[in-house]
Length: 160
Image 1 (cartoon, helix red, strand yellow):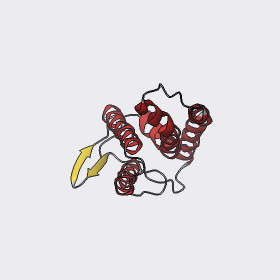
Image 2 (spheres, one colour):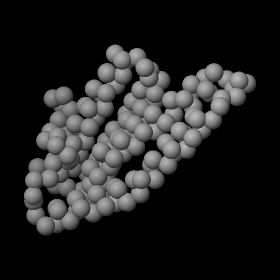
Image 3 (cartoon, helix red, strand yellow):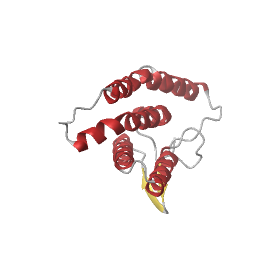
Image 4 (spheres, one colour):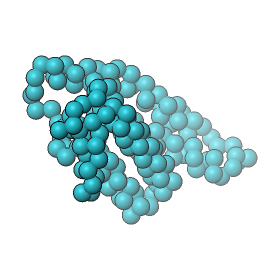
């Protein structure tokens, strides 16, 4: 795991666990903000395209799968300890991942109910778009959680 993060030319020291955890909290807060933004501009292609680019940038920052510049480098073999840590991180990340789909399924069920005409139009739009927002959030969790578990649980490292 890297001890420094290059953010547009500015080097940020992430050797301490506390700094890594704050960075992870900020990344997921931005993911939540992007899901809300995508949810609110749903249907406008140019806005949705910019939000998808922002998702890709955040995924690149976290790294881990195939992004070599991310804070969690992709697995390239390594020693037995590193391999065990990655296997365990995937186990922890995906142990209950299927439960993230239950709110989306419930939202689809609520969406299929006939809307009461007395409901506020904003509530009707919210219930109509809710399943898509929850599915996007589930996809983000699916692709980023193993790296986040590694990032969160790694102890303090020596600065390179």
